[in-house]
Image 1 (cartoon, helix red, strand yellow):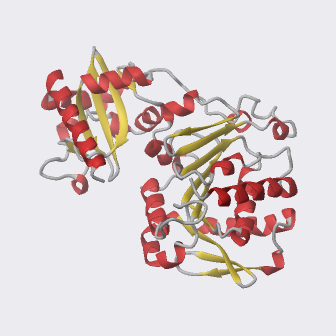
Image 2 (cartoon, one colour):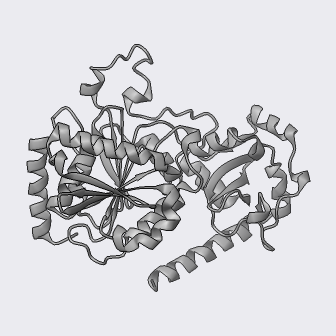
Image 3 (cartoon, helix red, strand yellow):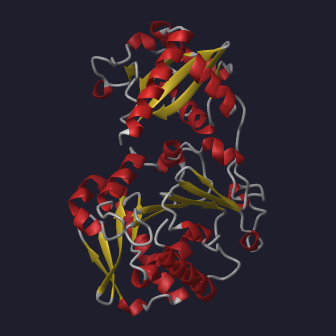
Length: 396
């Protein structure tokens, strides 16, 4: 935890800010209470629409940029969305009066928009597609340690390739100062509505099981993630819930879970640990895995671990990881999914695989025969990996 005097001063600052600028019927920015917690990197708020989280978190960090040097870096998916952040900043000034709008200015560069206030640099706006180029601007970015990614949950077709990888690249461009006051390391705020499970962020942070069990209107820490799920009934009362029904996620603040063919975490872990497996690299960061044990085939979309047996394309292949042959595919194989032949580890894997005929046409269970290992061999290999990880951790 950061210096106790600094933390106490920060806590008083929040109390005064909430009383002055945040109406009681909107999101009360409770994630900010743990901003100085050095164990946390991600602050995730998933709520119903209209909860006020985006508007109020934006407003807080714009004010804190001046008062506490907690300068925000607003991240959007595409270059064209930068204009929306500009307009939001202007609206925040008009509505909340946290800052004088007449003193706000914007300066466009090739890689980001610099937001200024009078003679100070206030914030930065950038997009994920610029992640690679932003490393050349690290001398500027390092001064904006609060990454805010609004609408990080989107419709399936709205996500961009390698989205999580690009978030990491921007973070690494920011993380160039040791032991920052109050926060030590940069923080990432992820704000969204429960649209679907296709977010690469949820996959990277392995939060699918967590989201199924996390109680609504609570905040809990999971490793380095602080997660808030919230339903704001004050806001819902003002909406027309007849048009979509009051069970729509826009009102409930919760995801809809189709649990058919999904295994519990305990059952999946058992099958993964004891069963046969085959892994196919499907992107620079993800693999599809098939596990078999106790007469069950289970499919999972997982992070690349460097031990993949095959790859989907020439670009991903290597001597140790050959590209799948043509006879590894069959359109008839898709019928197995209609007949509930496969189970899945979570909703994300199920959605991703069932929406991709290419993945479903892979005769993935047949590939297990070419990769067959005994239970004893698998257990021995996993134990060896565990010991190596422990050794690595000890000498970090």
